[in-house]
Length: 251
Image 1 (spheres, helix red, strand yellow):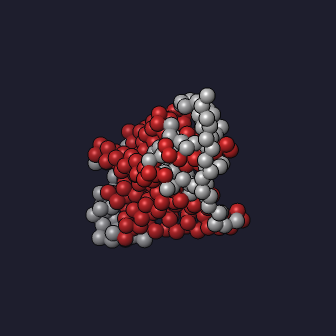
Image 2: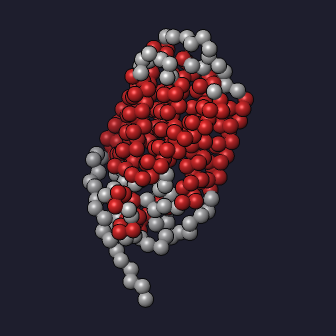
Protein backbone atom coordinates (compact mmCIF):
# COMPACT_ATOMS: atom_id res chain seq x y z
CA UNK A 1 0.00 0.00 0.00
CA UNK A 2 1.40 3.32 -1.02
CA UNK A 3 1.77 6.02 1.52
CA UNK A 4 0.52 9.50 0.69
CA UNK A 5 2.68 12.42 1.63
CA UNK A 6 1.42 15.89 2.24
CA UNK A 7 3.84 18.76 2.05
CA UNK A 8 3.25 22.25 3.25
CA UNK A 9 4.66 24.87 0.96
CA UNK A 10 5.75 28.35 2.04
CA UNK A 11 3.27 31.17 1.75
CA UNK A 12 3.42 34.80 0.75
CA UNK A 13 1.17 37.41 2.27
CA UNK A 14 -0.82 39.45 -0.24
CA UNK A 15 0.93 42.76 -0.81
CA UNK A 16 -2.21 44.83 -1.13
CA UNK A 17 -5.92 44.68 -0.58
CA UNK A 18 -8.23 43.94 -3.48
CA UNK A 19 -9.49 47.51 -3.49
CA UNK A 20 -6.02 48.75 -4.37
CA UNK A 21 -5.28 46.19 -7.07
CA UNK A 22 -7.24 47.89 -9.82
CA UNK A 23 -5.47 51.22 -9.28
CA UNK A 24 -2.01 49.66 -9.37
CA UNK A 25 -2.86 47.55 -12.39
CA UNK A 26 -4.24 50.57 -14.21
CA UNK A 27 -1.02 52.47 -13.48
CA UNK A 28 0.99 49.59 -14.97
CA UNK A 29 -1.22 49.67 -18.07
CA UNK A 30 -0.75 53.40 -18.58
CA UNK A 31 3.02 53.26 -18.09
CA UNK A 32 3.50 50.23 -20.31
CA UNK A 33 1.31 51.72 -23.04
CA UNK A 34 3.20 54.99 -23.07
CA UNK A 35 6.81 53.85 -22.82
CA UNK A 36 7.16 52.45 -26.35
CA UNK A 37 5.64 55.67 -27.70
CA UNK A 38 8.47 57.87 -26.38
CA UNK A 39 9.87 57.72 -29.84
CA UNK A 40 10.75 59.95 -32.73
CA UNK A 41 8.79 57.48 -34.82
CA UNK A 42 5.64 59.54 -34.34
CA UNK A 43 7.25 62.49 -36.07
CA UNK A 44 9.26 60.70 -38.73
CA UNK A 45 7.97 59.17 -41.94
CA UNK A 46 10.00 56.24 -43.13
CA UNK A 47 8.87 56.69 -46.70
CA UNK A 48 8.68 52.92 -47.09
CA UNK A 49 5.62 52.17 -45.00
CA UNK A 50 4.07 48.95 -46.21
CA UNK A 51 0.50 47.87 -45.79
CA UNK A 52 -0.51 44.56 -44.32
CA UNK A 53 -1.28 41.79 -46.78
CA UNK A 54 -4.28 39.49 -46.89
CA UNK A 55 -1.91 36.63 -46.09
CA UNK A 56 -0.91 38.28 -42.82
CA UNK A 57 -4.53 38.77 -41.80
CA UNK A 58 -5.35 35.14 -42.61
CA UNK A 59 -2.26 34.03 -40.69
CA UNK A 60 -3.37 35.91 -37.58
CA UNK A 61 -6.77 34.26 -37.85
CA UNK A 62 -5.22 30.81 -38.29
CA UNK A 63 -3.06 31.33 -35.21
CA UNK A 64 -6.22 32.08 -33.24
CA UNK A 65 -7.76 28.79 -34.39
CA UNK A 66 -4.70 26.81 -33.29
CA UNK A 67 -4.67 28.69 -29.97
CA UNK A 68 -8.26 27.64 -29.29
CA UNK A 69 -7.39 24.09 -30.32
CA UNK A 70 -4.53 24.00 -27.84
CA UNK A 71 -6.74 25.28 -25.04
CA UNK A 72 -9.43 22.70 -25.75
CA UNK A 73 -7.26 19.56 -25.96
CA UNK A 74 -8.41 17.27 -23.11
CA UNK A 75 -5.02 15.85 -22.18
CA UNK A 76 -3.92 14.99 -18.64
CA UNK A 77 -6.77 13.60 -16.64
CA UNK A 78 -8.14 15.47 -13.64
CA UNK A 79 -7.72 15.33 -10.73
CA UNK A 80 -3.92 14.92 -10.73
CA UNK A 81 -2.20 12.05 -8.94
CA UNK A 82 -1.18 14.24 -6.00
CA UNK A 83 -2.42 17.33 -4.18
CA UNK A 84 -0.20 18.64 -2.74
CA UNK A 85 2.69 17.05 -4.61
CA UNK A 86 6.19 16.38 -3.35
CA UNK A 87 8.49 19.37 -4.05
CA UNK A 88 11.42 16.94 -4.22
CA UNK A 89 10.21 16.05 -7.70
CA UNK A 90 10.86 19.61 -8.90
CA UNK A 91 14.39 20.41 -10.15
CA UNK A 92 16.45 22.42 -7.67
CA UNK A 93 16.68 25.45 -9.95
CA UNK A 94 12.87 25.65 -9.94
CA UNK A 95 12.08 24.47 -6.42
CA UNK A 96 12.82 27.80 -4.76
CA UNK A 97 9.96 29.38 -6.72
CA UNK A 98 7.26 27.26 -5.07
CA UNK A 99 4.90 29.49 -3.11
CA UNK A 100 1.25 30.52 -2.98
CA UNK A 101 -0.39 32.61 -5.66
CA UNK A 102 0.08 36.38 -5.27
CA UNK A 103 -2.77 38.11 -7.08
CA UNK A 104 -1.19 41.55 -7.21
CA UNK A 105 1.81 40.36 -9.22
CA UNK A 106 -0.39 38.30 -11.52
CA UNK A 107 -2.57 41.35 -12.23
CA UNK A 108 0.49 43.47 -12.92
CA UNK A 109 1.77 40.95 -15.46
CA UNK A 110 -1.63 40.93 -17.19
CA UNK A 111 -1.65 44.66 -17.63
CA UNK A 112 1.99 44.90 -18.61
CA UNK A 113 1.38 42.49 -21.51
CA UNK A 114 -1.72 44.39 -22.56
CA UNK A 115 0.08 47.71 -22.34
CA UNK A 116 3.06 46.39 -24.27
CA UNK A 117 0.76 45.17 -27.04
CA UNK A 118 -1.15 48.44 -27.31
CA UNK A 119 1.93 50.63 -27.14
CA UNK A 120 4.01 48.72 -29.68
CA UNK A 121 1.17 48.21 -32.15
CA UNK A 122 0.16 51.86 -32.12
CA UNK A 123 3.74 53.00 -32.58
CA UNK A 124 4.48 50.48 -35.35
CA UNK A 125 1.32 51.38 -37.24
CA UNK A 126 2.09 55.10 -37.03
CA UNK A 127 5.78 54.96 -37.89
CA UNK A 128 6.52 51.75 -39.76
CA UNK A 129 3.23 50.88 -41.41
CA UNK A 130 0.50 48.29 -40.93
CA UNK A 131 2.71 45.49 -42.29
CA UNK A 132 5.07 45.85 -39.33
CA UNK A 133 2.14 46.06 -36.93
CA UNK A 134 0.54 42.91 -38.41
CA UNK A 135 3.91 41.15 -38.27
CA UNK A 136 3.93 41.82 -34.53
CA UNK A 137 0.35 40.56 -34.19
CA UNK A 138 1.23 37.54 -36.30
CA UNK A 139 4.25 36.79 -34.12
CA UNK A 140 2.19 37.11 -30.95
CA UNK A 141 -0.61 35.00 -32.43
CA UNK A 142 1.60 32.07 -33.40
CA UNK A 143 3.43 32.38 -30.10
CA UNK A 144 0.10 31.91 -28.33
CA UNK A 145 -0.72 28.93 -30.54
CA UNK A 146 2.60 27.18 -29.93
CA UNK A 147 2.40 27.96 -26.22
CA UNK A 148 -1.10 26.56 -25.76
CA UNK A 149 -0.31 23.42 -27.75
CA UNK A 150 2.89 22.90 -25.74
CA UNK A 151 1.04 23.40 -22.46
CA UNK A 152 -1.53 20.79 -23.48
CA UNK A 153 1.10 18.20 -24.45
CA UNK A 154 3.58 18.81 -21.61
CA UNK A 155 1.04 19.02 -18.79
CA UNK A 156 3.42 20.35 -16.17
CA UNK A 157 1.96 21.15 -12.76
CA UNK A 158 1.99 24.77 -11.64
CA UNK A 159 3.76 25.79 -8.41
CA UNK A 160 0.43 25.93 -6.57
CA UNK A 161 0.20 22.14 -6.84
CA UNK A 162 3.10 21.90 -4.39
CA UNK A 163 1.51 24.12 -1.73
CA UNK A 164 -1.31 23.86 0.80
CA UNK A 165 -3.69 25.33 -1.79
CA UNK A 166 -3.25 22.37 -4.13
CA UNK A 167 -6.59 20.85 -3.18
CA UNK A 168 -8.36 24.04 -4.26
CA UNK A 169 -6.59 24.02 -7.62
CA UNK A 170 -6.54 20.29 -8.37
CA UNK A 171 -9.75 20.31 -10.44
CA UNK A 172 -8.66 23.18 -12.70
CA UNK A 173 -7.00 22.16 -15.96
CA UNK A 174 -4.88 25.33 -15.89
CA UNK A 175 -3.15 23.89 -12.83
CA UNK A 176 -1.60 21.33 -15.18
CA UNK A 177 -0.49 23.83 -17.81
CA UNK A 178 2.57 25.55 -16.48
CA UNK A 179 5.11 24.94 -19.27
CA UNK A 180 5.76 27.29 -21.03
CA UNK A 181 4.67 30.63 -19.58
CA UNK A 182 2.11 32.19 -21.91
CA UNK A 183 2.45 35.72 -20.58
CA UNK A 184 6.22 35.58 -20.98
CA UNK A 185 6.13 34.12 -24.47
CA UNK A 186 3.71 36.78 -25.72
CA UNK A 187 5.63 39.59 -24.01
CA UNK A 188 8.91 38.48 -25.60
CA UNK A 189 7.23 38.10 -28.98
CA UNK A 190 5.88 41.66 -28.77
CA UNK A 191 9.13 43.15 -27.53
CA UNK A 192 11.35 41.26 -29.99
CA UNK A 193 9.14 42.11 -32.96
CA UNK A 194 9.19 45.76 -31.92
CA UNK A 195 12.96 45.79 -31.48
CA UNK A 196 13.52 44.18 -34.89
CA UNK A 197 11.07 46.48 -36.66
CA UNK A 198 12.60 49.65 -35.19
CA UNK A 199 16.28 48.67 -35.32
CA UNK A 200 17.10 51.50 -37.76
CA UNK A 201 15.90 54.24 -35.42
CA UNK A 202 18.38 56.51 -33.73
CA UNK A 203 16.35 56.57 -30.51
CA UNK A 204 16.86 53.16 -28.87
CA UNK A 205 15.09 54.00 -25.62
CA UNK A 206 11.66 52.64 -26.65
CA UNK A 207 13.19 49.34 -27.73
CA UNK A 208 15.09 49.08 -24.44
CA UNK A 209 11.91 49.79 -22.48
CA UNK A 210 9.99 47.20 -24.48
CA UNK A 211 12.64 44.60 -23.68
CA UNK A 212 12.65 45.58 -20.01
CA UNK A 213 8.86 45.23 -19.92
CA UNK A 214 9.08 41.70 -21.31
CA UNK A 215 11.68 40.78 -18.69
CA UNK A 216 9.47 42.28 -15.98
CA UNK A 217 6.56 40.12 -17.10
CA UNK A 218 8.68 36.98 -16.70
CA UNK A 219 9.83 38.02 -13.24
CA UNK A 220 6.28 38.83 -12.16
CA UNK A 221 4.96 35.44 -13.31
CA UNK A 222 7.46 33.72 -11.02
CA UNK A 223 6.82 36.19 -8.18
CA UNK A 224 3.07 35.59 -8.58
CA UNK A 225 3.55 31.87 -8.02
CA UNK A 226 2.11 31.09 -11.45
CA UNK A 227 5.22 29.67 -13.10
CA UNK A 228 8.61 28.17 -12.48
CA UNK A 229 11.72 29.97 -13.80
CA UNK A 230 12.19 27.29 -16.46
CA UNK A 231 8.61 27.93 -17.68
CA UNK A 232 9.56 31.57 -18.16
CA UNK A 233 12.82 30.74 -19.92
CA UNK A 234 11.10 28.41 -22.38
CA UNK A 235 8.35 30.98 -22.92
CA UNK A 236 10.91 33.64 -23.81
CA UNK A 237 12.54 31.26 -26.29
CA UNK A 238 9.16 30.48 -27.92
CA UNK A 239 8.35 34.18 -28.26
CA UNK A 240 11.66 35.13 -29.80
CA UNK A 241 11.65 32.06 -32.06
CA UNK A 242 8.20 32.92 -33.41
CA UNK A 243 9.39 36.41 -34.27
CA UNK A 244 12.39 34.98 -36.09
CA UNK A 245 10.17 32.77 -38.25
CA UNK A 246 7.52 35.41 -38.98
CA UNK A 247 9.95 38.21 -39.79
CA UNK A 248 12.02 35.91 -42.02
CA UNK A 249 8.90 35.09 -44.03
CA UNK A 250 7.47 38.62 -44.18
CA UNK A 251 10.64 40.63 -44.65
